Image 1 (spheres, rainbow, N blue to C red):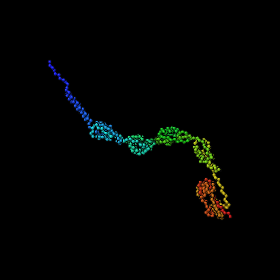
Image 2: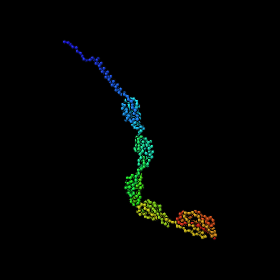
Image 3: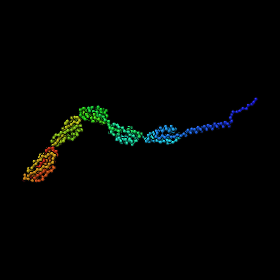
Image 4: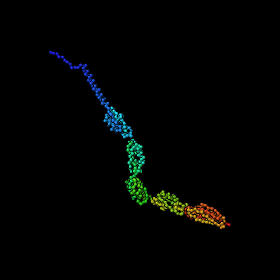
Length: 405
């Protein structure tokens, strides 16, 4: 019987350690290769596109198509909003696709406040809007508040905050729109107001007491049927029944006081005169018609009787014995010299004197006066008179007093 030798399959410790080292080295080599591969992908390069003057949306798409990302910085600029002003790195350069491209983008010119130009001439209004940073576009509109060629307002309205360089509509007046004025004479006040207002006019009222058709329109201005600007005013006169008032008592008052008393009551005074014999009644209200306490319509005429006192004509004193008297009736509105002469044999050493005879007496009365008198010779005496309106006869009297032998 043979004895067989057994063989063991167990590897020696030295061989096992050798195989393990080789495996780890292979794994490390693979790891390094993978890292190098990944690193190589990140370092790919591309040409940066030029995005200046493009809109932000287009610029970002252009960069993305080349594998780039971007950052955005917005600034105020006169260029359009969202327009790319500059970039870094510059377009046309070759950069790693991992680089971020910095874009500077316009945020527009900023905002401003629309100025109030209503009432300004068209050219001045446009300049104000341009100075505020806006672009005015004029539109002609009807306006009753502003004359043709002047600004009515803007759209958007004044005070609105808006983007500069944006368009602002400037409304310029071409005057009021014209329309026919309806005829409202004979209408009630309410119906006249309605007709005129519906036609586009404003209505002003005045009143006249005629007691013919109270409450109805007596007159209008402008007249019905004429053309006038819409928004302009039409004056209508409405009949009003006169108010009834009591006549106040003015008897015993002066003419001025009586007139004021009646005026305060809404009445009108007319005057007649009555001659009186007492100076205390001169200018005094003696009677009135209608009488005090009567009820009459406001605006009625009340007749006041005013006292008039005439000074009595003084008697002409008799000429002294041995005197010569010459009389000269005076005419109105003239200046004239009168001369009285006498014979020295009939009137020895005569001395003259001139006076006026009539209402008042003396040297001045009722619009007549002696302005000069004298005795130029032994047998002559003169007097100069001046008259204006003479209300009663006036006579110049020259008296020569003679010496008595």
